[in-house]
Image (tube, rainbow, N blue to C red; front, side, top):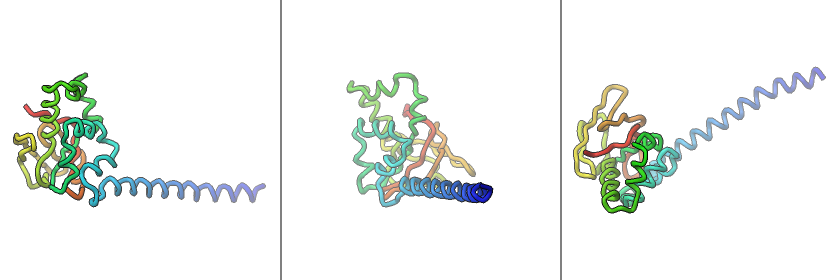
Length: 172
């Protein structure tokens, strides 16, 4: 009995370590899949579970083609959580079939896109696909774009880069 207990207690830490290593490997594989530079911007965003609301809005606005094409773009990508901070009903209004609401949705989503690959450290202002300029403020260890904080930068894709932001950028 004592021998069986001893074997079990020495086996248990090995199992725990094995599960931890396996979990770490899965997490690393997920991160690599999300940042796979052989995938286009749309595929990278789809592989990352934080952007389903943005992707729905991109599709509704008809702006998915630039994200999956050969041209290079930068996407300032608000997370699902960021969309949750909008005024109640705001996103539903933009996503409605009303022509004015659709135009506003296109303006908002195209404000999150820039032609070319934007380096936050090397840029102080960019012109968005929507047509307006947006300020970039990069300090040591942090950056902001417009009124949004960049929470993750330089997520690489075959046709550009994603900078994850903590709020929805809304043009004036």
